[in-house]
Amino acid sequence: MQSPAGSTPDPVRTVALKRVTIVGEAVLEKRLVALVRDAGAKGFTRLACSGEGSRGVRASDWEGANVKLETLVSAEVANVILATLARDYFEHFAVVAYVDEVHVVRGDKYV
Amino acid sequence: MDSLDLVRLNLASPMVLGFVLGIVATLLKSELKLPEALHSGLSSYLLLAIGLKGGGELAKAPLDELSGPLLATLAIGVTSPIWCFAALRTFGKLGVVDAAAIAAHYGSVSVVTFTACGTFLDGAQVGYEGFMSALVAFLEVPAIVVAILLARRASTSAAPWGETLREVLGGKSNLLLCGGVAIGALAGPSLEQVKPFFVDPFKGVLTLFLIDMGALAARRLSDLRAAGGFLAGFALVMPLVNGAIGAMLGEFAGLSLGGTTIFATMVASASYIAAPVAVRIALPEANPALYLTSSLAITFPFNLTVGIPVYHAIARWLHA
Image 1 (cartoon, rainbow over the protein chains, first blue to last red):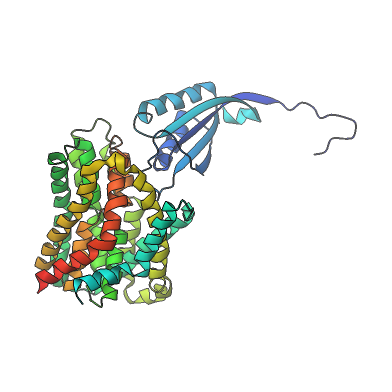
Image 2: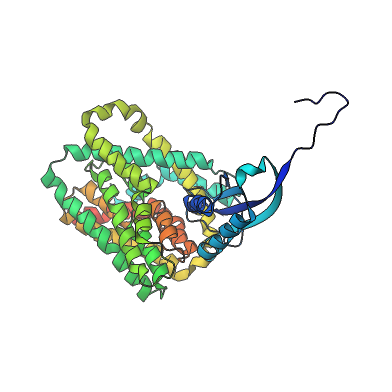
Protein backbone atom coordinates (compact mmCIF):
# COMPACT_ATOMS: atom_id res chain seq x y z
CA MET A 1 0.00 0.00 0.00
CA GLN A 2 1.23 3.48 -0.83
CA SER A 3 2.05 5.54 2.24
CA PRO A 4 0.40 8.94 2.50
CA ALA A 5 2.48 11.69 0.88
CA GLY A 6 5.13 13.16 3.17
CA SER A 7 5.13 10.36 5.79
CA THR A 8 7.43 7.29 5.89
CA PRO A 9 5.98 3.87 6.78
CA ASP A 10 6.61 2.42 10.22
CA PRO A 11 9.67 0.11 10.29
CA VAL A 12 8.66 -3.48 9.45
CA ARG A 13 9.56 -5.91 12.20
CA THR A 14 11.84 -8.71 11.06
CA VAL A 15 13.20 -11.77 12.81
CA ALA A 16 16.77 -13.02 12.47
CA LEU A 17 16.75 -16.60 11.14
CA LYS A 18 19.07 -19.00 9.39
CA ARG A 19 18.58 -19.78 5.73
CA VAL A 20 19.91 -23.26 5.00
CA THR A 21 20.57 -23.96 1.33
CA ILE A 22 21.24 -27.50 0.15
CA VAL A 23 22.24 -28.36 -3.41
CA GLY A 24 22.40 -32.07 -4.11
CA GLU A 25 22.04 -34.64 -6.86
CA ALA A 26 18.45 -35.05 -7.98
CA VAL A 27 18.15 -38.71 -6.98
CA LEU A 28 18.33 -37.51 -3.38
CA GLU A 29 15.38 -35.13 -3.65
CA LYS A 30 12.86 -37.14 -1.63
CA ARG A 31 15.44 -37.94 1.03
CA LEU A 32 16.61 -34.35 1.41
CA VAL A 33 13.04 -33.12 1.75
CA ALA A 34 12.40 -35.73 4.46
CA LEU A 35 15.63 -34.75 6.21
CA VAL A 36 14.69 -31.06 6.28
CA ARG A 37 11.19 -31.79 7.53
CA ASP A 38 12.31 -34.28 10.17
CA ALA A 39 14.83 -31.76 11.49
CA GLY A 40 11.91 -29.47 12.26
CA ALA A 41 11.70 -27.06 9.33
CA LYS A 42 8.20 -25.69 8.76
CA GLY A 43 8.59 -25.42 5.01
CA PHE A 44 11.05 -25.20 2.16
CA THR A 45 11.50 -24.00 -1.40
CA ARG A 46 12.59 -26.50 -4.03
CA LEU A 47 14.28 -25.71 -7.33
CA ALA A 48 15.59 -27.88 -10.13
CA CYS A 49 19.02 -26.68 -11.12
CA SER A 50 22.26 -27.75 -12.69
CA GLY A 51 25.92 -26.96 -12.28
CA GLU A 52 29.37 -28.38 -11.94
CA GLY A 53 31.61 -29.36 -9.09
CA SER A 54 34.30 -31.76 -8.08
CA ARG A 55 32.23 -34.93 -8.61
CA GLY A 56 30.69 -34.16 -11.96
CA VAL A 57 29.01 -37.44 -12.77
CA ARG A 58 25.30 -37.86 -12.06
CA ALA A 59 23.59 -41.21 -11.82
CA SER A 60 20.60 -40.14 -13.76
CA ASP A 61 19.76 -37.70 -16.49
CA TRP A 62 16.27 -39.00 -16.19
CA GLU A 63 15.79 -37.75 -12.64
CA GLY A 64 17.31 -34.39 -13.52
CA ALA A 65 20.68 -32.95 -12.59
CA ASN A 66 20.51 -31.24 -9.23
CA VAL A 67 17.94 -30.10 -6.73
CA LYS A 68 18.24 -27.04 -4.52
CA LEU A 69 16.35 -26.74 -1.25
CA GLU A 70 16.11 -23.55 0.77
CA THR A 71 14.58 -23.42 4.18
CA LEU A 72 14.21 -20.75 6.88
CA VAL A 73 14.84 -22.19 10.33
CA SER A 74 16.14 -21.48 13.81
CA ALA A 75 19.84 -21.90 14.55
CA GLU A 76 19.18 -25.21 16.34
CA VAL A 77 17.27 -26.71 13.43
CA ALA A 78 19.93 -25.48 11.00
CA ASN A 79 22.53 -27.31 13.02
CA VAL A 80 20.52 -30.54 13.03
CA ILE A 81 20.13 -30.34 9.24
CA LEU A 82 23.83 -29.80 8.68
CA ALA A 83 24.89 -32.52 11.11
CA THR A 84 22.56 -35.06 9.50
CA LEU A 85 23.75 -34.11 6.02
CA ALA A 86 27.35 -34.51 7.07
CA ARG A 87 26.67 -37.89 8.63
CA ASP A 88 24.58 -39.45 5.84
CA TYR A 89 25.45 -37.78 2.55
CA PHE A 90 28.73 -35.89 2.36
CA GLU A 91 30.90 -38.95 1.94
CA HIS A 92 29.34 -40.56 -1.13
CA PHE A 93 27.03 -38.02 -2.74
CA ALA A 94 27.41 -34.70 -4.45
CA VAL A 95 25.93 -32.35 -1.84
CA VAL A 96 26.70 -28.75 -0.96
CA ALA A 97 25.20 -27.00 2.05
CA TYR A 98 25.57 -23.52 3.47
CA VAL A 99 23.89 -21.27 5.97
CA ASP A 100 23.44 -17.56 6.01
CA GLU A 101 21.76 -15.13 8.31
CA VAL A 102 18.59 -13.55 7.00
CA HIS A 103 16.03 -11.11 8.37
CA VAL A 104 12.59 -12.44 7.70
CA VAL A 105 9.31 -10.60 7.63
CA ARG A 106 6.70 -12.44 9.68
CA GLY A 107 9.64 -14.54 10.87
CA ASP A 108 7.72 -16.01 13.82
CA LYS A 109 6.01 -18.36 11.38
CA TYR A 110 9.22 -20.27 10.84
CA VAL A 111 10.29 -21.16 14.34
CA MET B 1 19.23 -60.48 -47.05
CA ASP B 2 22.84 -61.12 -46.01
CA SER B 3 24.36 -59.88 -42.79
CA LEU B 4 26.03 -56.87 -44.36
CA ASP B 5 22.71 -55.71 -45.80
CA LEU B 6 21.20 -56.05 -42.35
CA VAL B 7 23.90 -53.89 -40.80
CA ARG B 8 23.35 -51.31 -43.54
CA LEU B 9 19.59 -51.46 -43.04
CA ASN B 10 20.07 -50.93 -39.32
CA LEU B 11 22.50 -48.04 -39.69
CA ALA B 12 20.25 -46.26 -42.17
CA SER B 13 17.16 -46.26 -39.96
CA PRO B 14 15.91 -42.84 -38.84
CA MET B 15 16.36 -43.84 -35.19
CA VAL B 16 20.02 -44.81 -35.49
CA LEU B 17 20.75 -41.80 -37.69
CA GLY B 18 19.05 -39.61 -35.09
CA PHE B 19 21.32 -41.11 -32.45
CA VAL B 20 24.35 -40.35 -34.62
CA LEU B 21 23.12 -36.77 -35.06
CA GLY B 22 23.01 -36.41 -31.28
CA ILE B 23 26.61 -37.65 -30.99
CA VAL B 24 27.86 -35.44 -33.80
CA ALA B 25 26.12 -32.38 -32.38
CA THR B 26 27.74 -32.91 -29.00
CA LEU B 27 31.17 -33.46 -30.52
CA LEU B 28 30.69 -30.16 -32.39
CA LYS B 29 29.92 -28.62 -28.99
CA SER B 30 26.41 -27.74 -30.10
CA GLU B 31 23.63 -27.58 -27.54
CA LEU B 32 21.21 -30.12 -28.92
CA LYS B 33 20.02 -31.35 -25.55
CA LEU B 34 16.25 -31.51 -25.10
CA PRO B 35 14.82 -29.72 -22.09
CA GLU B 36 14.98 -32.00 -19.07
CA ALA B 37 11.21 -32.14 -18.63
CA LEU B 38 10.74 -33.21 -22.26
CA HIS B 39 13.40 -35.91 -21.96
CA SER B 40 11.65 -37.27 -18.90
CA GLY B 41 8.24 -36.98 -20.59
CA LEU B 42 9.39 -38.79 -23.73
CA SER B 43 10.88 -41.64 -21.68
CA SER B 44 7.60 -41.97 -19.79
CA TYR B 45 5.75 -42.11 -23.09
CA LEU B 46 8.05 -44.79 -24.51
CA LEU B 47 7.95 -46.95 -21.38
CA LEU B 48 4.19 -46.79 -21.08
CA ALA B 49 3.66 -47.44 -24.80
CA ILE B 50 5.91 -50.52 -24.63
CA GLY B 51 4.12 -51.79 -21.54
CA LEU B 52 0.68 -51.29 -23.12
CA LYS B 53 1.69 -53.13 -26.25
CA GLY B 54 3.21 -56.01 -24.29
CA GLY B 55 0.21 -56.25 -21.98
CA GLY B 56 -2.25 -56.32 -24.85
CA GLU B 57 -0.35 -59.15 -26.53
CA LEU B 58 0.20 -60.96 -23.23
CA ALA B 59 -3.56 -61.23 -22.73
CA LYS B 60 -3.93 -62.80 -26.17
CA ALA B 61 -1.05 -65.27 -25.95
CA PRO B 62 -1.82 -68.88 -24.94
CA LEU B 63 -0.17 -69.85 -21.66
CA ASP B 64 1.85 -72.76 -23.05
CA GLU B 65 3.41 -70.50 -25.66
CA LEU B 66 4.24 -67.94 -23.01
CA SER B 67 5.55 -70.06 -20.15
CA GLY B 68 8.89 -71.03 -21.76
CA PRO B 69 9.98 -67.49 -22.69
CA LEU B 70 8.76 -66.15 -19.35
CA LEU B 71 10.77 -68.71 -17.40
CA ALA B 72 13.81 -68.05 -19.60
CA THR B 73 13.49 -64.31 -18.88
CA LEU B 74 13.38 -64.79 -15.13
CA ALA B 75 16.22 -67.33 -15.21
CA ILE B 76 18.54 -65.08 -17.18
CA GLY B 77 17.58 -62.06 -15.07
CA VAL B 78 18.69 -63.84 -11.91
CA THR B 79 21.83 -65.51 -13.26
CA SER B 80 23.41 -63.05 -15.70
CA PRO B 81 24.43 -60.50 -13.03
CA ILE B 82 26.30 -63.33 -11.28
CA TRP B 83 28.55 -64.15 -14.22
CA CYS B 84 28.98 -60.47 -15.09
CA PHE B 85 30.04 -59.91 -11.48
CA ALA B 86 32.43 -62.87 -11.60
CA ALA B 87 34.00 -61.62 -14.85
CA LEU B 88 34.48 -58.11 -13.44
CA ARG B 89 36.03 -59.46 -10.25
CA THR B 90 38.23 -62.09 -11.91
CA PHE B 91 39.47 -60.34 -15.04
CA GLY B 92 39.05 -56.70 -14.10
CA LYS B 93 40.06 -56.98 -10.42
CA LEU B 94 37.30 -54.52 -9.56
CA GLY B 95 36.14 -54.05 -5.99
CA VAL B 96 33.03 -55.95 -4.87
CA VAL B 97 30.75 -52.91 -4.80
CA ASP B 98 31.80 -51.48 -8.17
CA ALA B 99 31.64 -54.92 -9.80
CA ALA B 100 28.15 -55.51 -8.42
CA ALA B 101 27.01 -52.05 -9.51
CA ILE B 102 28.14 -52.72 -13.09
CA ALA B 103 26.66 -56.23 -12.99
CA ALA B 104 23.28 -54.73 -12.06
CA HIS B 105 23.37 -52.67 -15.27
CA TYR B 106 24.42 -55.54 -17.53
CA GLY B 107 21.95 -57.99 -16.02
CA SER B 108 19.08 -55.53 -16.37
CA VAL B 109 17.72 -54.41 -19.72
CA SER B 110 17.81 -51.27 -21.85
CA VAL B 111 14.28 -50.59 -23.01
CA VAL B 112 15.44 -48.33 -25.83
CA THR B 113 17.81 -50.99 -27.20
CA PHE B 114 14.94 -53.47 -27.07
CA THR B 115 12.73 -51.04 -28.97
CA ALA B 116 15.41 -50.37 -31.56
CA CYS B 117 15.64 -54.12 -32.14
CA GLY B 118 11.89 -54.24 -32.79
CA THR B 119 12.11 -51.49 -35.39
CA PHE B 120 15.13 -53.24 -36.94
CA LEU B 121 13.10 -56.43 -37.34
CA ASP B 122 10.17 -54.45 -38.76
CA GLY B 123 12.57 -53.01 -41.33
CA ALA B 124 13.95 -56.44 -42.16
CA GLN B 125 10.38 -57.77 -42.33
CA VAL B 126 10.95 -60.41 -39.70
CA GLY B 127 7.98 -61.11 -37.44
CA TYR B 128 8.23 -61.58 -33.67
CA GLU B 129 6.04 -62.40 -30.69
CA GLY B 130 4.11 -59.32 -29.54
CA PHE B 131 4.42 -60.31 -25.89
CA MET B 132 8.20 -59.67 -26.00
CA SER B 133 7.55 -56.15 -24.67
CA ALA B 134 5.97 -57.69 -21.59
CA LEU B 135 9.09 -59.80 -21.02
CA VAL B 136 11.16 -56.60 -20.88
CA ALA B 137 9.17 -55.63 -17.80
CA PHE B 138 10.13 -58.93 -16.17
CA LEU B 139 13.81 -58.62 -17.05
CA GLU B 140 14.35 -55.14 -15.65
CA VAL B 141 14.19 -55.75 -11.92
CA PRO B 142 15.60 -59.20 -10.91
CA ALA B 143 19.19 -58.48 -11.96
CA ILE B 144 19.28 -55.23 -10.01
CA VAL B 145 18.10 -57.01 -6.85
CA VAL B 146 20.57 -59.90 -7.28
CA ALA B 147 23.49 -57.54 -7.91
CA ILE B 148 22.68 -55.43 -4.87
CA LEU B 149 22.54 -58.64 -2.81
CA LEU B 150 26.03 -59.52 -4.08
CA ALA B 151 27.37 -56.15 -2.97
CA ARG B 152 25.75 -55.85 0.41
CA ARG B 153 28.21 -58.07 2.26
CA ALA B 154 31.04 -55.78 1.24
CA SER B 155 29.30 -52.43 1.35
CA THR B 156 29.66 -50.17 4.35
CA SER B 157 27.06 -47.67 3.24
CA ALA B 158 24.34 -49.79 1.62
CA ALA B 159 20.82 -48.42 2.07
CA PRO B 160 18.39 -50.52 4.16
CA TRP B 161 16.62 -53.31 2.24
CA GLY B 162 13.16 -51.81 2.50
CA GLU B 163 14.33 -48.58 0.99
CA THR B 164 16.27 -50.38 -1.72
CA LEU B 165 13.31 -52.51 -2.76
CA ARG B 166 11.03 -49.49 -2.77
CA GLU B 167 13.50 -47.71 -5.00
CA VAL B 168 13.75 -50.64 -7.44
CA LEU B 169 10.10 -51.66 -7.57
CA GLY B 170 8.61 -48.21 -7.13
CA GLY B 171 10.99 -46.52 -9.57
CA LYS B 172 9.31 -44.57 -12.35
CA SER B 173 10.50 -46.85 -15.13
CA ASN B 174 9.37 -50.06 -13.44
CA LEU B 175 5.97 -48.59 -12.54
CA LEU B 176 5.39 -47.32 -16.08
CA LEU B 177 6.48 -50.59 -17.71
CA CYS B 178 4.64 -52.94 -15.35
CA GLY B 179 1.69 -50.55 -15.03
CA GLY B 180 1.52 -50.42 -18.83
CA VAL B 181 1.56 -54.22 -19.04
CA ALA B 182 -1.25 -54.43 -16.48
CA ILE B 183 -3.34 -51.79 -18.22
CA GLY B 184 -2.73 -53.41 -21.59
CA ALA B 185 -3.68 -56.87 -20.31
CA LEU B 186 -6.83 -55.62 -18.58
CA ALA B 187 -7.96 -53.27 -21.33
CA GLY B 188 -7.53 -55.85 -24.11
CA PRO B 189 -9.43 -54.84 -27.24
CA SER B 190 -10.30 -51.38 -25.93
CA LEU B 191 -6.60 -50.49 -26.32
CA GLU B 192 -7.70 -49.47 -29.83
CA GLN B 193 -8.88 -46.21 -28.28
CA VAL B 194 -5.35 -45.08 -27.40
CA LYS B 195 -3.66 -46.51 -30.50
CA PRO B 196 -3.50 -43.19 -32.38
CA PHE B 197 -1.44 -41.77 -29.52
CA PHE B 198 0.62 -44.72 -28.27
CA VAL B 199 1.25 -46.73 -31.44
CA ASP B 200 1.28 -44.56 -34.53
CA PRO B 201 3.65 -41.77 -33.33
CA PHE B 202 5.87 -44.23 -31.44
CA LYS B 203 8.77 -44.41 -33.89
CA GLY B 204 8.80 -40.65 -34.36
CA VAL B 205 9.04 -40.12 -30.62
CA LEU B 206 11.75 -42.77 -30.45
CA THR B 207 13.77 -40.91 -33.10
CA LEU B 208 13.53 -37.65 -31.16
CA PHE B 209 14.46 -39.44 -27.94
CA LEU B 210 17.46 -41.09 -29.58
CA ILE B 211 18.83 -37.73 -30.73
CA ASP B 212 18.85 -36.76 -27.08
CA MET B 213 20.35 -40.11 -26.06
CA GLY B 214 23.14 -39.60 -28.60
CA ALA B 215 23.92 -36.25 -27.03
CA LEU B 216 23.90 -37.78 -23.53
CA ALA B 217 26.08 -40.73 -24.53
CA ALA B 218 28.61 -38.48 -26.26
CA ARG B 219 28.90 -36.28 -23.21
CA ARG B 220 29.77 -39.37 -21.18
CA LEU B 221 32.66 -40.15 -23.51
CA SER B 222 34.83 -37.75 -21.55
CA ASP B 223 34.54 -40.15 -18.62
CA LEU B 224 36.06 -42.97 -20.67
CA ARG B 225 39.47 -42.39 -19.15
CA ALA B 226 38.02 -42.87 -15.67
CA ALA B 227 36.49 -46.16 -16.80
CA GLY B 228 39.78 -47.50 -18.13
CA GLY B 229 40.74 -50.00 -20.81
CA PHE B 230 39.43 -53.10 -19.13
CA LEU B 231 35.95 -51.69 -18.65
CA ALA B 232 35.84 -50.41 -22.25
CA GLY B 233 36.65 -53.94 -23.40
CA PHE B 234 34.13 -55.43 -21.01
CA ALA B 235 31.44 -53.09 -22.35
CA LEU B 236 32.05 -54.46 -25.86
CA VAL B 237 32.64 -58.16 -25.12
CA MET B 238 30.03 -58.75 -22.42
CA PRO B 239 27.09 -57.83 -24.70
CA LEU B 240 28.35 -60.31 -27.29
CA VAL B 241 28.68 -63.07 -24.70
CA ASN B 242 25.30 -62.27 -23.16
CA GLY B 243 23.74 -61.92 -26.62
CA ALA B 244 24.97 -65.38 -27.66
CA ILE B 245 23.71 -66.92 -24.41
CA GLY B 246 20.41 -65.08 -24.85
CA ALA B 247 20.04 -66.32 -28.41
CA MET B 248 20.59 -69.93 -27.34
CA LEU B 249 18.17 -69.61 -24.45
CA GLY B 250 15.55 -67.87 -26.62
CA GLU B 251 15.81 -70.59 -29.25
CA PHE B 252 15.58 -73.24 -26.52
CA ALA B 253 12.50 -71.52 -25.04
CA GLY B 254 10.72 -71.93 -28.36
CA LEU B 255 10.75 -68.34 -29.62
CA SER B 256 10.52 -67.52 -33.33
CA LEU B 257 13.54 -66.15 -35.25
CA GLY B 258 12.46 -62.57 -34.55
CA GLY B 259 11.62 -63.37 -30.93
CA THR B 260 15.03 -64.99 -30.43
CA THR B 261 16.75 -61.92 -31.90
CA ILE B 262 14.85 -59.66 -29.52
CA PHE B 263 15.52 -61.93 -26.56
CA ALA B 264 19.26 -61.96 -27.35
CA THR B 265 19.23 -58.16 -27.65
CA MET B 266 17.42 -57.82 -24.32
CA VAL B 267 20.00 -60.00 -22.58
CA ALA B 268 22.90 -58.23 -24.32
CA SER B 269 21.68 -54.73 -23.46
CA ALA B 270 22.67 -52.79 -20.36
CA SER B 271 20.25 -50.64 -18.39
CA TYR B 272 20.87 -46.92 -18.03
CA ILE B 273 17.52 -45.70 -16.75
CA ALA B 274 16.34 -48.01 -13.94
CA ALA B 275 19.65 -49.45 -12.76
CA PRO B 276 21.64 -46.22 -12.24
CA VAL B 277 19.00 -44.68 -10.00
CA ALA B 278 18.53 -47.85 -7.93
CA VAL B 279 22.28 -48.44 -7.63
CA ARG B 280 23.03 -44.83 -6.74
CA ILE B 281 20.68 -45.08 -3.78
CA ALA B 282 21.38 -48.68 -2.76
CA LEU B 283 25.17 -48.64 -3.22
CA PRO B 284 26.27 -45.03 -2.79
CA GLU B 285 29.97 -45.89 -2.68
CA ALA B 286 29.96 -47.41 -6.18
CA ASN B 287 31.48 -45.04 -8.72
CA PRO B 288 28.84 -43.80 -11.21
CA ALA B 289 31.53 -42.93 -13.75
CA LEU B 290 32.25 -46.66 -14.10
CA TYR B 291 28.76 -48.07 -14.46
CA LEU B 292 27.26 -45.22 -16.47
CA THR B 293 30.11 -44.77 -18.89
CA SER B 294 30.25 -48.45 -19.74
CA SER B 295 26.50 -48.93 -20.15
CA LEU B 296 25.52 -45.61 -21.72
CA ALA B 297 28.59 -44.46 -23.62
CA ILE B 298 29.90 -47.80 -24.90
CA THR B 299 27.43 -50.70 -24.75
CA PHE B 300 24.35 -48.75 -25.79
CA PRO B 301 25.83 -47.27 -29.02
CA PHE B 302 27.53 -50.59 -29.78
CA ASN B 303 24.28 -52.54 -29.51
CA LEU B 304 22.34 -49.96 -31.44
CA THR B 305 24.69 -49.97 -34.43
CA VAL B 306 26.51 -53.32 -34.59
CA GLY B 307 25.10 -55.52 -31.84
CA ILE B 308 21.51 -55.91 -33.04
CA PRO B 309 22.42 -57.19 -36.54
CA VAL B 310 25.01 -59.52 -34.95
CA TYR B 311 22.43 -60.99 -32.55
CA HIS B 312 20.08 -61.43 -35.47
CA ALA B 313 22.80 -63.27 -37.38
CA ILE B 314 23.41 -65.56 -34.37
CA ALA B 315 19.68 -66.19 -34.06
CA ARG B 316 19.44 -67.01 -37.78
CA TRP B 317 22.34 -69.41 -37.52
CA LEU B 318 20.75 -71.14 -34.52
CA HIS B 319 17.34 -71.15 -36.13
CA ALA B 320 18.48 -72.72 -39.40
